[in-house]
Length: 330
Image 1 (tube, rainbow, N blue to C red):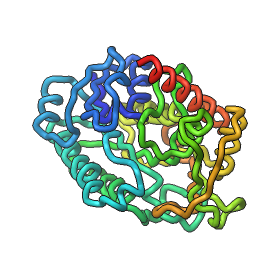
Image 2: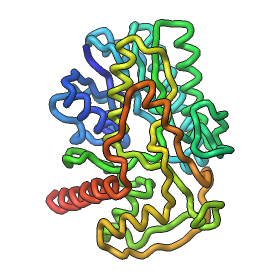
Image 3: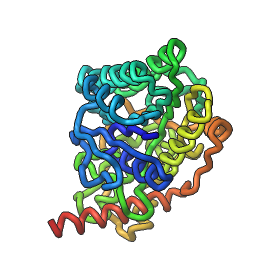
């Protein structure tokens, strides 16, 4: 059987494709390359250029390939952009996910793994956050993810569809073997941005808000290595194929680091004392988001392997160096 990976030319999706191929899976990538890169898809995977919201294309894919599982990454992910363009986010994230779910039901594809987000929790009352905490998103991005979770839940009750919605906390790092990493030019993730500053690709790093109710005044996040994250997806695929019931699961490490902690790690690993400036808070940023992670281990048997901040940073930094070399050679 084959696995369809939407958004498989993007950051997390390309790592998922590598993990699936390493596990001996037959992989089909669907990506419109609006933010992904064709070179990020290995030759061993079948690549289809197209939109995950194109129902005719989806039906043709399902009719002509023995697909038994979908891993859905395609979508827009920048919280401030979602506040500026809510309809664009609901269109790209929610409406296209609905089309994909409908095509899966019509084509009798039984297993669906969805790339959700800790943004569904909004500003939580307590940290760490358990999966049964009330979802109250504060951005259109978070709402778009929650709406897709609701659609999956309702559809699973009405049809032969099992799903796993994995709520990511802050994904960072790169493939330890250097095969893929975060390559988006406008990336806003703090680990990547700090690595760029350390390597002279940015004149300075800006910290958005230093007056949060946290020990050092900056936001606290639960950073998860991208390789560990896609490992959780592999376990979810095995779980669903074995007849596991639908599940909503946090993906993090259960430990929080502040923005200043991340900057300190990048400076330590890179041995570069790059300039840091402070600025106002960004819209849609909770003070702290840390995952309660017992359930993902209990349900999937997943165990992290790369759960040290300096490890995440070292792999991200190595990837940034590779990107610099690639640009210089091209």
